[in-house]
Length: 243
Length: 287
Ligand SMILES: Nc1ncnc2c1ncn2[C@@H]1O[C@H](COP(=O)(O)OP(=O)(O)OP(=O)(O)O)[C@@H](O)[C@H]1O
Ligand SMILES: [Mg+2]
Image (cartoon, rainbow over all chains, first blue to last red):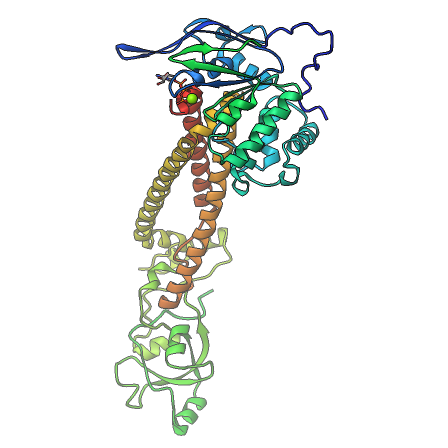
């Protein structure tokens, strides 16, 4: 099954692929009255297709801020953020929304599933927004729920699912429009160790199947499961293994 | 055609219904007086059609054995007339001649009603009475009704004002609830926006939900109102023994309520959701 079939798997002679994320000397300042909070101070990094990156660091060091820049939710105050070759800072709101819908999957700490919708309907939501026909939507939603191990729960509403199961539905939803990049901010933050481990497994599988995964986390296990760990402190990257 | 029964005579006293044989024979030899009594009287005095009673124009006289014996020929139902509701006296209807004989006032009537077939006949009858009967004036019942129902119109206007205030107040209540409901979902909306759901889709879905809530709410409200009116009517019809409807759920009221609910609901949904989607999603997340 090819759930994440946006990109071809690199063949034996493949050259080093173009990065899907390229952050160049990015700053993000928040003016707070007379003061300015420097959330990011000159961050540069690249994320390759099929990359699996964990961003770690103390609270307030700018991890979420960086993730938001990569997710085209926020713009750098200075510097450049290119996602799949497109300048995130230059996109208008409507373009950015459309871009997020089709190219980026978001996973949040608190799942944010729609309570009135069933698991399958939640997964279908981004596809409906993208204009996918309903039969195709339903089929893909089932396929994705199978992929995250919840095929039997498609008719259940979030209230009838455990935290771990809800997070898996949220991941299925994030994959709905076959994004090349999956961004997750503390995806195991609300889960116990065992369910957290299931999510870690799922990310790993997803990444093997061709999606670039970037997680921001305080969870050592989740960080250890990534191929690369980027360490941040005070709005800067302090160590970053080569990709 | 003169109405079958003369006017209601409140001054008439009703004697004991049980009548001795001599009197009964005497009554039978005469042209029998037949009367109609109203339902409440029939109930309270346990009278039925065919029973004989003694009628007298002066209090106490009937009981003493004098007065006219009459047979109950009919039992009439109360009209659904608001001016009759609070009256707890009984109505008895007599043939005009019997009434005149009983009161000792021959050739005297204060009022009488004529039933016509309607249409132009009414006007021609009126014209003829007004020409022929000196000292009489014939009115259309509708004109009389306008005069006598003025008080009720005022009361009814008050009721309408109260109903309108209630509806507007509950509409504002609905507005607040919907605003709160949308406000409660700011994080959900933020997540949707981050996922790439457009502002338009978010607003549309909230407006649709608000319209649905308003529609279901007003349907429930109408049902509840209807049930309330049934109970109120059941209760007061029993208390006042009248077929009058005390509470009405009219199509007009339902229409006003439903339209108001939907307009307010959709308006509130639209306002709240447009305000939220204009806020950057990260701000909605509480950052
Ligand atoms: N909207 C904002 N306005 C002002 N300051 C902000 C805003 N967003 C973030 N900051 C500040 O920027 C800095 C980095 O915040 P960020 O959320 O990226 O930290 P983080 O590394 O994700 O922390 P945590 O691990 O606690 O989630 C913090 O000092 C924070 O207070
Ligand atoms: Mg954070």
